[in-house]
Length: 286
Image 1 (cartoon, rainbow, N blue to C red):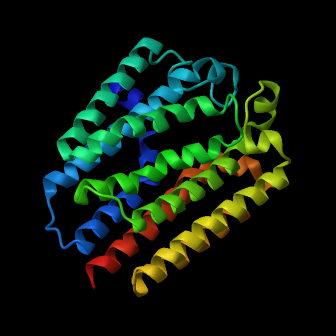
Image 2 (tube, one colour; image 1 turned 180 degrees about the vertical axis):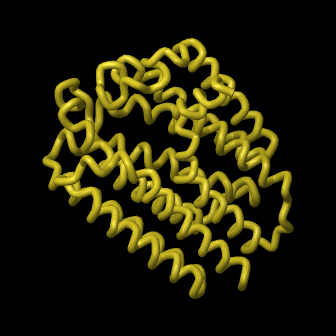
Image 3 (cartoon, rainbow, N blue to C red; image 1 turned 90 degrees about the horizontal axis):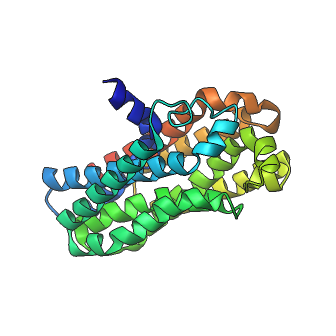
């Protein structure tokens, strides 16, 4: 059991809650909009792909950053630098999850299989971006944002505008909160030539950039509601999502960086679950 908990800690399995609700929303939207009967097996396939993809991405991130993590006091206790998981074992874990992801995509449909290498390039490539660009936050957002598109493709075998708008919302929402999270490491990033928005700009400027990204996320969410005939449940979810984003920016001001670690995951997880759950209810009660 210790090994299982170590690997769960390695990939921060609890953070799956950031993208998973949006993927489930796209899944339900695909079923409803195409009048496709619900299929438990297909849902299992989607969940297998989501979990294995995220395991691969996070495991690779921890493997690649192991030396950086070891020198950062905030991250020195992570599983690889702390010696609970060896670098070799972590890489085996990444490879196994990549294989599971590709096999899962093959199990779903032809388009999912064809796009699986592209998804892996984005998911694994994000970990390299902090070494050369401050746009790394947007790449992380894209890595999470492809989840609803993938869920829609799993049902329909095709693309559509709505899941792409949902991907935009996830990308900009994620990039916005990742900028806030990165404020914890601004001094470390600058001293080690690592790239992030807070390392490049002041904390106040970084907060404004985060706000701008979250504004784009809200525009995308509102556009989905207005453009696809959603009802009151959806708009209640959108209102709550907006309130949670506002609360986040009140809590995690530049003068209160110390608050980020304790409640950050809970606040953002609450935002995704609240919005997606009420949007799914709206779809089901039409």
